[in-house]
Length: 218
Image (cartoon, rainbow, N blue to C red; front, top):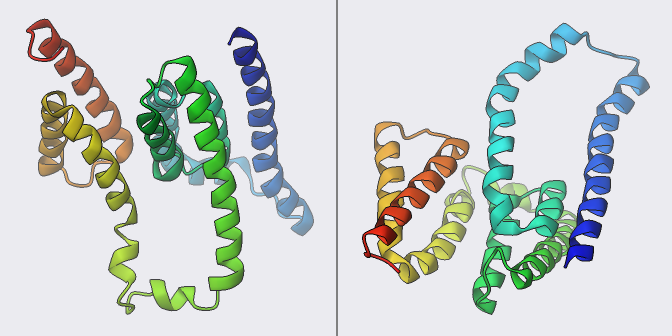
């Protein structure tokens, strides 16, 4: 596993840097093509409100998701995106079905395979969807469509089904963090996921530790 981890981090860093370079070069190429380069003041003025939200969230997601995904799946997930919607549920579901821990060697391999498979399948489905459903998709997702409410509930349904299996298996340690998050949403219903996830993680760790010390859970 030492050699595997070394190569994983090597190739992971290479692809992260390559992806970052590609993301930066696209707007630069567009600006060069149209000979329109905005001033630094305009760029930072538009970036500031977004950066205040997404930069801390990005750091929190790395800290929160990495122990669950493992190194290989983390590199794949943060390069290809859709971590919360696809990569994380796929990796957790695969490890749960195989009955392996996220921080084990088996979990590392399995989560990497699951994240990679999810990326490939997602790419194929998106390509097929663009080609086949682009003519009718606006009619399905428009506000007047009878299917519109279903499209807005895809992510809650996905995580509700995934989370319920964990809540049922670990009912005692799930009560406190769920109650804490629900209490936060009662006082402020528009809290961002970047706030709810780290708070839920901290509450989960503290409550589980206290329950273990008191012998409530083993």
